[in-house]
Image 1: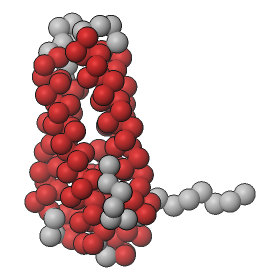
Image 2: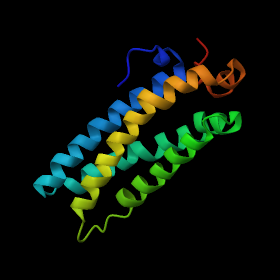
Image 3: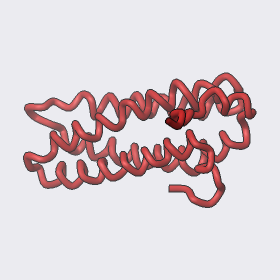
Image 4: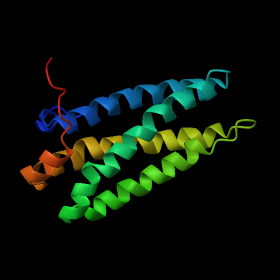
Length: 146
């Protein structure tokens, strides 16, 4: 993951990047299980989907919505959303009785490239592109101290 530009200092980017690490680790476990063809593969797939679905929803309804509205990165956002749909379609559509593990492995390769594009392309560009008001709208707020 990116550590050179400082974009992780933005709380939302920091959270999404941390989620990317967790997702990448879960994808790695699925990759190992799918290659082995053992009983661990379907639970590993479910674990990855449980992480992936809320993550992409948060991206699309938060950061991506602001970038779409700003306009200059709308084409890149559309491409990333199409990749979300593709990856979710493959991983979410696995036939549990006869899984197509080669298709899953190919989707995991696309997921790896997708995360890399967000980490090293979109996130640093978003920091430069979005105005402070947009960050104020999408930045998670800390719970009040008690």
